[in-house]
Length: 177
Length: 423
Image (cartoon, rainbow over the protein chains, first blue to last red):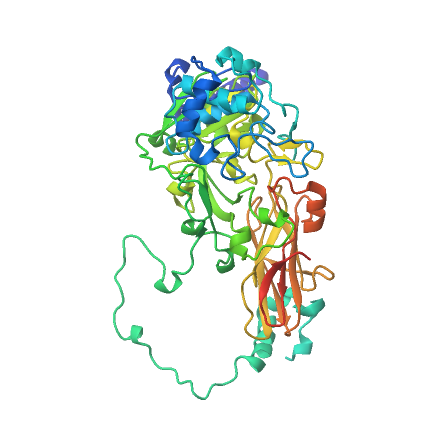
């Protein structure tokens, strides 16, 4: 009898606890459900594994025309830049005393080039290039660095195959305290 | 009390910090009066004009005294080729305490400050979650919030000190990319839990609504810890320059990952390797490998007064003061040297020393007109001690110039000029 009474008391307590918790959870659930398909024009994230690469394609020579129209004011006719931050071409991480760090010498992933140009370039009109124009411009930047051939048609499949010279040059320190 | 009765605690004029308190102040006053505060026979105090006419009415929004208008952030010249890119630095040499006024909090923007209508702004949480969600500003204001005092520091702060020669600069120009504030917001874990984190998720990818759509990847275990969706700064809505209507806030870590104008959080297995975590904000070591995702800011302090480009007009007692902080804990100790690091004395640290917040330190110092090199050295609650500039540069090299947290040296010459030096 004593045991039963204890059981009932405990059960009653846990019922009220459950009600209390669900009330809290309801009060905090204010987000509106959405589907990934509703984010296609919103989510610009392109990762090294190929996720987020859109349709579209083009070559370095197509990109050269865009580059000379939209990019040279900061990045120079040959990607030499107007300062260390805007230089896109050259450099060597191993041989130079103070390595010049560019897309060619430093960036570990080609996906970053797509991701960044798509979201942030050109600086005076970000997001004004079509996906094909982004593929073309980055094909030209990679080509100036000798990373891809003139003939390459860059698209979501071929971008995934591009290997950057400094791909093994980084150490993930994210878990260091 | 005579000069001799002030307890000297380190060479070249440093005086026991207890003289900052009641009994000691009398001593300081006496010492100062011998050279500074003697009776001036020509001075006759009268009731000033502003005591004889009613002043201004109360106002809807306050402003500072017109006599303090020279207290300004220092912003570089705009670059027409890089619209909106740049930084403004807090006037550390003019500030006191450990909270930076919102108007003087440092800024760093990558594509300018967007003019965001909160009614149109959305925060999306998606990717490896049970249910992708979108939140409005009004939705978010209804969540339980927390308030915490934290420092925020750009990882490029003090970067010029990696250079081979000391720059002619001030506390503001050299170190002004750090500020302190009380941040109020929603623990990010609350919102991530609501979306339901998939067991395969390892990173969040946070993106802002600025013209650069600037993004950073942050490990999920960190995001579920003390990271906040900040909506208020020092009690008022976060200002546009700080991310209005909302920003991420990652305590103790390089400012860039506290993404402003936050609009997207995508959960993924791997980091995105955004431009600002590959090309920028990475640390190339002497062996040419580059460290990525180096988040915590080092144990650091800087003397804000006397500091670079100031001039000591006369000999006597000065209050040496500054700020100290650590991305890994609270500040337990700040030592000050007036002889370039040969002898050290403990400075007084103001009472509340919270985790990952600025701590104000002070110590009296008697300048007798000779050469001096003022330095400060912080120790945090984890036992981390601020390194000398030489040891930091020897260890890290100077290919990259992020995360400088070495000891700053301010030289005082016999004319009283204060300058940045390497000592």
